[in-house]
Amino acid sequence: MKKKIVVAITGASGSVYAKLLLQKLQDLQDQILEVGVVMSDNARDVWKFELGNESYRDFPFKFYNKADFWAPFASGSARFDTMIIVPCSMGTLGRIAAGISNDLTTRAADVMLKERQRLILVARDTPLNLIHLRNMQTVTEAGGIICPAVPSFYSRPKTIEDVAMTVVNRIIDLAGLEHESYRWSEGEK
Image (cartoon, rainbow, N blue to C red; front, side, top):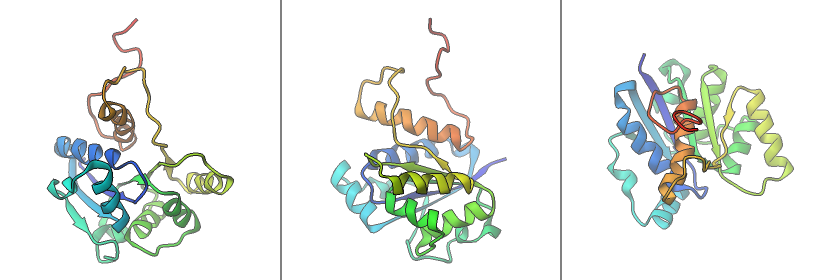
């Protein structure tokens, strides 16, 4: 069954993760029925600053305004099954943990939790304070998945994008999509 996926991009540092995720979702379109994207204003600014471009405009997905509560994934009746917030700022995480639906990202996250669908928050901040940790606990207890943007190195990545892709591959796994990626101990001794 093809997936309906929401990708929300916040203004936290880590635009490379969002870019690589959108590229990977584009490559996996045979498994996907629909991808909706919502970006905060800060996300656009950070993308341009960190990546030096506005290449998010090049993806074939439908983009929604952060205040568009008419977006299909603002309601459980649209039956989106996965939401990925990448990168996820601590402010967004806090609003989700508190049940505050003041924009499309937080409303869609609330919908995913109430509908018992997959919500993946790619937290991108360090160090973490106790409030962050408690918010992560709250979201986890409500059914969300916290996937910190912590890369792995056992695949021996060569470039910054290779390093970031180790996180994106975990996100794709958590979303339940089939794809090729490095797997621990497969074919290596």
